[in-house]
Length: 72
Image (cartoon, rainbow, N blue to C red):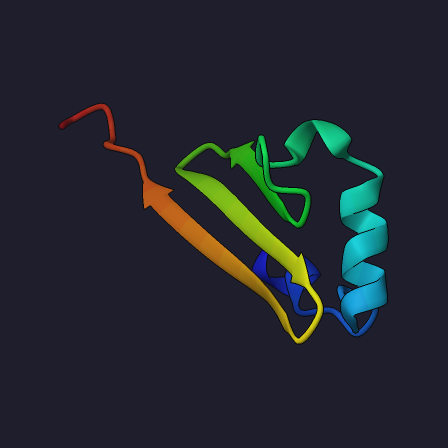
């Protein structure tokens, strides 16, 4: 996931970030038209990508939550 998020063609600017988020209106934060949340359930971790698409204040935050293994 990290490699994809840091690839040369990934979110290169605000326009690219807005275009990506606009394709996923279901990810929009209720009542806030410029923030989006994406989740991915991996085998060992859960990933939460928070995208803020405000002009002059756009950011990406990647949170990674490790899952407990079967042995606790």
